Length: 276
Ligand SMILES: [Zn+2]
Image (cartoon, rainbow, N blue to C red):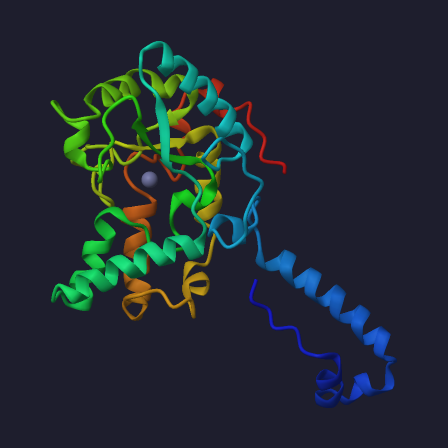
């Protein structure tokens, strides 16, 4: 991923053997060298830069951005919800690395401005926000949902709005009943056994795709991906911290043996291809 490609002239200078080769021969050699090395480093079925939000995949949607399979399933779910007088609206879908970093750094600064220590600011951010490069919103499979038949709120994504008597109580009940029919699952649920992010009743994951992304994501060398990225608090990202973060926030307990396989009916998992 981060292979530094030396300029052919400087390589000639460093290694005398290259000085007897013609310039274009050196260039050809370098191309072969780079492509072989890249293959050896990236063992994921989905390119690492897409898994960490650094490269935009092909996305679809109306006022939102999802991979095609998630988009089509969402449209069907939206039609069903309309019949039940709920107008599903995606408050957030795909977010790239830079977008996530902007949100993260802003939150981190706010916490520091309130007088929190670096460690406390990190803990505050991690209540609801993923470290840039680790958000499932990078995958184009995640949605944060509200119902726009309900009154507009300044801060719609609050737990209390999805609870009894809240603005989105009906939406919450409906999603609990029907989202799974379309492949969408509430992964940051209110199971007290679950570690990681707090309960997010608005966040749904399109697991027919995301469960496969998740497996691939676990192969990513996170430290390399987060290095030199100007992420607030990154000086606290020790190996120990990152291992614990992955265990609690990425491998959370509603994932069984590193996959969502047992969490899903096989009929939903199998038809989706990740070949592109
Ligand atoms: Zn979300």
